[in-house]
Image 1 (cartoon, rainbow, N blue to C red):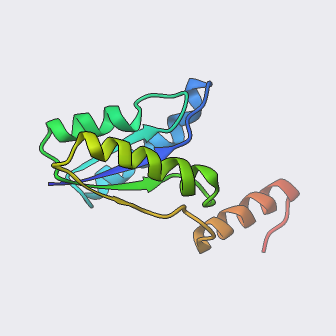
Image 2: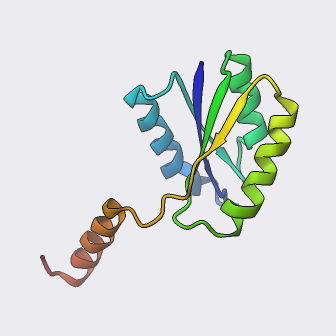
Image 3: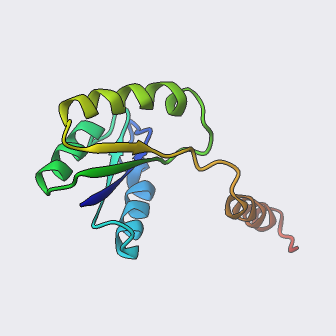
Length: 124
């Protein structure tokens, strides 16, 4: 069975992760994978280890870890691969794949444009 883990930074403010948790729920609703769950690198829970343990208990054998980051900075390029390797060592029965940062997707450009137009009171 396949699973997706949407992983974000985490925050000392518990409400900060709500948007990512909602995004994970929307991915789950789309039915792309039987299991979709959120995880956080720092400060917030569930951690990647906690999420993977739960998915392993549900019979997931392949996990795609999708960073919920705009850019491929140090967290995505350095910290996340180390963390995934550690968790994978605890779950040799699971095949892990890590996605790329969300990046400069056209939808993000459109969102930035819409927000700027709203703030400036202009339209395209």
